[in-house]
Length: 122
Image 1: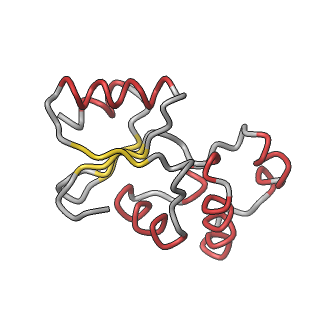
Image 2: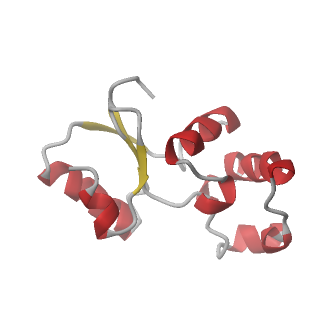
């Protein structure tokens, strides 16, 4: 991601993701789109985004996805010692990443899945 620029990790097939881009458009926010399924983030990028979100990898994991079930993620630990395992899984299987994630120009980030989160982007 380019510093000082808003970026959205977007899946155009996802309603919540489309709602977020529509909200950004309506608010006049200039942004770039990262189709994270086609351009998956690295473990280091995920670390940086999680720091901006003040979140842990399991906080942004779609544990209901079949991939998560196949990996047995519901049974995985959720401690600092388990963090790399989660990050590796998210990098290898970007479909597991909650969407959309908006990385704001001021260095913040929002998991923009609801109206309140979207309003914080204005």
